[in-house]
Length: 369
Image (cartoon, rainbow, N blue to C red; front, side, top):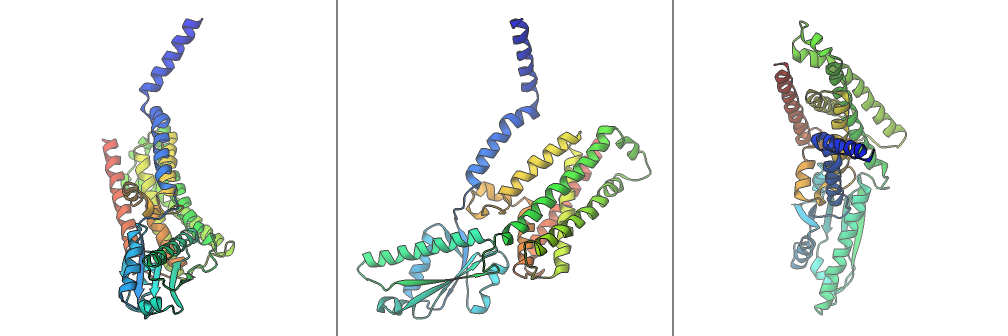
């Protein structure tokens, strides 16, 4: 009896070892998760881009700016000329913080006169804004300590902080746009991949293929209802965010809805591609959930800052559609950004849609042959 049982166990082992998908779930997924979580799950900042408005332009102000950059936490994105440019970088999503250094900085610093520098932070992501402000405060304290140790005994530098786009630091302003992007990507991609995979699994795809409709129209016919329903889903989520969580829509409502529709099309294109490489609904669902949920949550900047991750994960994050859609949502809803400001993100999503559809069509034709 024991021999039979042992033979049965060995047979199961052989089945598992020969099944690449099972091995991928057993070893590949835990390895990927521990690496991604280990590197991505951090609230620390590295190379956070900030803008500088230096009214003083003296030796001490330059030393302070160099001191901030030497920490490795900050890099200067732009040196501003006037107050009119304060929101330019933040509205475009390029900068998270503006440091304003007053006139006569060096003179007041060494004379012991009251002195304050101003920090203007992007409050659309409250946790990141608070962390950045804390970093700057720490660096300013270290700068003063170094001057004291050099025997210069400077007067205390005050730091005045102002949050814009979300002065109350309401967390919903951050998680609502991220949740919208996550829900639409997973739901649209998963539903699309399942509907085409279902035709394959039931054997009804062959019936569709012998119909007068070409493959492109077959795919569009399957996807169009989901595009319409997913867009309604996007509108419902936006309404909940606006009326329940009081997330404002400062920018153009028409532009916002247009961007939601573009993102829905991108997600559906991704789902179509997944369906062409999946023989069953179960396979399509696993690829949709595991291939989209984890990267979209961790590598899009939704929960953790993308700039603080290793360069490899940053590159991976840059191919996640949610990364660009979250920037678009925050830009329009919270910063009042127009199309000219989010043009780069829009261009990337359009390019992704075209590439995904082209790959899906190519793979679909290969399978037909």
